[in-house]
Amino acid sequence: MQGSHTSTSARHNDGDDRRLQLVSTADRGLPPGLAAAVDGHLATFAEHVREGLLAASTAVGLEVMTEMMQAEVTAIAGVKGRHDADRSHTRHGTEHGSVTLGGRRVPVTRPRVRTVGDDATEVALATYQRFADTDLLTEQVTARMLAGISTRKYPVALEPVGEAVERSATSTSKSAISRRFVAATAEHLAELCARPLDQARWPIVMLDGVHLGEHLLVVALGVTDDGTKVPLGVVEGSTENAEVCTRLVADLADRGLDVSHGILFVIDGGKALAKAIRATFGPKALIQRCRRHKERNVLGHLPEAERPLIQRKLRAAWANNDADAALRELHALARALERQRPGAAGSLREGLEYTLTVNRLGVTGSLLKTVESTNPIESMIEIVRHHARRVKRWQHGEMALRWTAAGMLAAQDQFRRVKGYQQLPALLTALAKATADQPGETSLDHRVAG
Image (tube, rainbow, N blue to C red; front, top):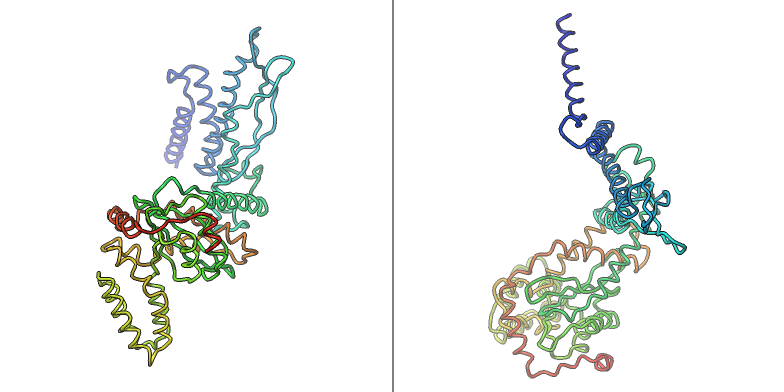
């Protein structure tokens, strides 16, 4: 027993010795001032390490931040207590402030500096301003909300930073988070709807609708000449509402969307949307109706047993590179359906030629998969829906617009270039050729008249 006790004591002593060696740095050749600072930080780290590595690191980080502010004060106002007749700045005590830390605001005491003279003014410390920046907090709040964390559960989802910091932290209440998120998403909406469009070439623009609760919105996605996808805008309303569609399309024109060399608009099939595009941009805008929407509409009029055959015939016709031959095949299919399935025949004939625009442009391969449907913009819409999945009650249309804009901008960070982007130069050539002899009126007067 005695041997065991001795062994245990020895182990404790060894641990104490190692700890002392860890926190004692004066004998490591460091300057006395630096050694004292390091020893102090190590002691703070050891004191908080039981709360976790992040909490211990936070405690040390706050100390280092204070030292950085003091170092800046010294650089501006000189060494404290040392007389300097030519000094242009002087210390002016301290003041309560707060900094952003892990999705919360933490109170700190910040030093103050003023200029010397009768017209003395406060000097802002760059160090404090950097740590106190609220934009970082807003970004963290927005990211957590879009990730599905509710305002009520927001404090629970924050990283642990130690009991002392948690007790003094602010800006984590439900109302505070809600206000900050509303302000941030309002900025996102304004940013999205004000993006200038005259600084890029847009061979493709896609338009589609999205439902959020009882609200329906129309969103726009552009593709640049290098295949980059960019959210362009959003309005509240239906793709069947002429006023709503005209407002969105006219806004794209007002922000500089250039159709002088032709643009391919890929739309979900709304008549009002196609009319708004033609009225705004004239014949320089070529319209491709989404084939997946058309296919679903036609098959929806058919019994389950008949759908596979009709689907194969539709896709076979669309796969024909000869647009005129493909149109004849589709008209023949509509005639075959006319007697027994008049609803399917009527659905097929409606806007039929717009489903063959890409055939007439000679689009094939991977790029064809991109532009024959609105799938790229629907992928963006799915990201919007995913971010808003935990919203239980849509209070008004402005809320739906804000969430949609925030989701669209978040989706942009996940975008890859469109499939077949290597074929975009050929598409640009085809668009220019197809619209070369067409007038390109895009004035506001023309849009209103249309």
